[in-house]
Amino acid sequence: MQVIPRFYATKRILIGTGTSLYYTRGFPSETISETDEFPGQPTMYTTSKTSSFSSQATLALPVAFYLIIKS
Image 1 (cartoon, rainbow, N blue to C red):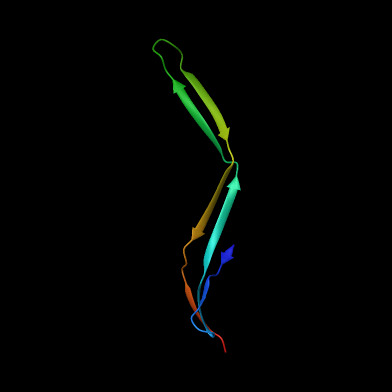
Image 2 (tube, rainbow, N blue to C red):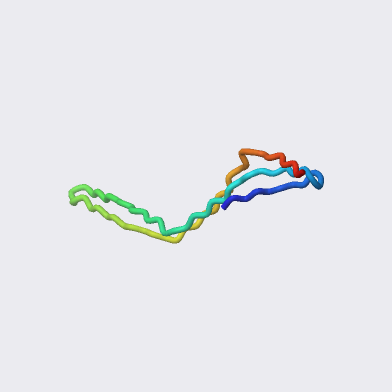
């Protein structure tokens, strides 16, 4: 989504900038592996998977400024 904030300096002169808003969401998964070692015992391996809903919004800072003059 592109957002263009504008400020009217006068009726014919406009100052603006461009910025972007990024929004992501989903179900990222994560695998966790654990190892338990006890003396004289066989090594035990445990693996588990987790997944949960995640959403994130990021606003990119402006990289350009515009001077617009209307005729």
